[in-house]
Length: 473
Figure 1: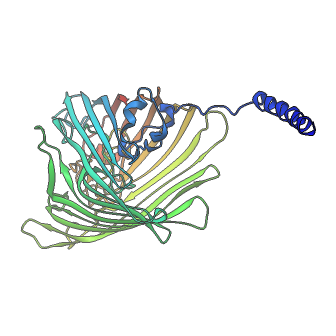
Figure 2: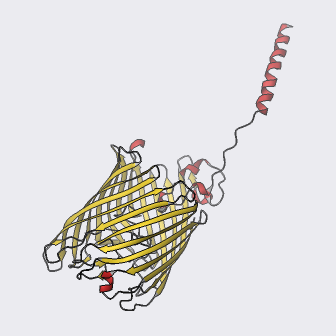
Figure 3: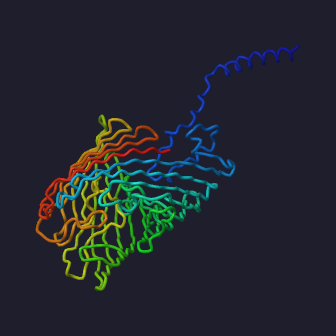
């Protein structure tokens, strides 16, 4: 009897709690991953889709980003691509000096890549590319045209403890390292390198090492190769500073170039550079400053060596307001040394090894050699996907004893004269990330000649208008 009473009492206590547990609100089911959770990167090889490994029945396009081959071993493939259509229009492209004809260049770029992850240690990345161009005068640039070729093809090998992870990358690869090495987005084919790169961390430093040749872009199919006359050895490291949000970086490199052109002539160059950089952001402020000293030698054909002694620096800083449209007010200063005396045994012309051709302005008229400029500008973002940048560049030559060069090292201004001021270039740029897949961009530059250009009979304003549309997946 007592046993029956106890069982009944126990049931009376348990049943209400069970019912209450069923009626209690359940935690919401996790949302399925969205493609917008995986932003497309400037370097497509930087994208990481490994965290999709625990997901089932992925929908397109995520089903292209994680194709499981062996879930237990972490083996999967990822696929992507890009089509870009771009137009560049130049009006009075020589500032009216010889009445060069206006032109509009139409470029198309095609890219497809496969990213194969063979577990946590080995990865294979292969990208095919092709490009077409029509309309450019006097002709297409290197990197504008080409039948299908290996844009990139490298293997990554990871090793080391988790807290001090290292990666060895071998093969053809894109490299972006500050102002020293840029990817050359202005042409259809980005600049790539055939070689070896290592990345890792040690004693609080992030470390990058590079030993590579520049890839020569040729026009036939699968004929691109490493340039034996243009290669670089580079070591870069950065470490956190006591001021939170900022880092100190140091770079040392040697570039061997068998085809450089300066006012003193052509020759074989072995240029070494030591650079220091401070960069970071905090409380709305951001800064990126760098100074470099270069040494080595240039051997002009049939002449004695010229000792290289050159310096350059760049500083960009800004402040982003928290008001509507989040305007960023910014200021940039650049200084690149020039050759003070062409008759001595030294070369003082500063030269970045592989610069961004459109670093000074989108029109890509001048190279960072023997020039100095100031550039105030502002960027506003009415929405998260739309931005407008407007500013003006004021450009001088550092010394009148040296020339002023184009990004492909053709002299726009020869040495001589007394005027320093080269050009004023107001500009505007609009970028619209229409959605995850489509980017639109437009830019205008109005380059007005200064006294130095006017003294060389270049007395009319040059106008540049560009527009591009990119579809990426």
